[in-house]
Length: 171
Image (cartoon, rainbow, N blue to C red; front, side, top):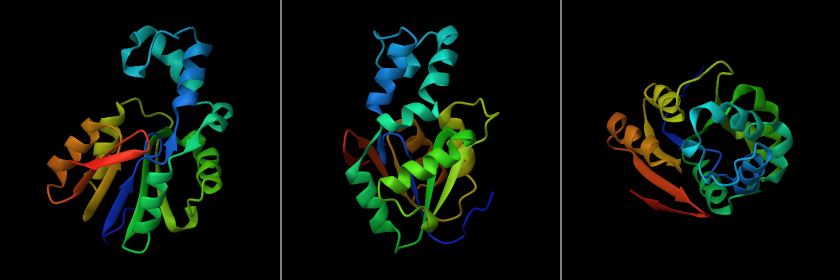
């Protein structure tokens, strides 16, 4: 995996560039888990069925663009390298590229790093392994506070942005 040596701006997909809330509801409904709101609350024995449905290319069409995250990404394109770091598995590479292009993200000007299909670590652990290899991390935009906390330890000088709804705050 190529990682740049110049200033890097990192953006997550789900929760930052994409609103996956409808996909989440549909996946929970599909596997009979309507009472849950967050995947981490699902009992371990049921999680695999949920993730299989949630990460199906067919449900990606339910996603909506997060205008704020996309505007921030577009602004950063001229300032350094934009790296899109997602916990989505690599088998969704073509679908993710098509989805982001349809939302106005110029994918030919970004680097997309996805979780290997065989990767089973938690999202935060996968992302930490990538972030640790970036030399000049300037900013990271994520919707998971745990990812930002790891980024803070690895890159204390980086600006950290926690995204929620279609908004964000610097932490």
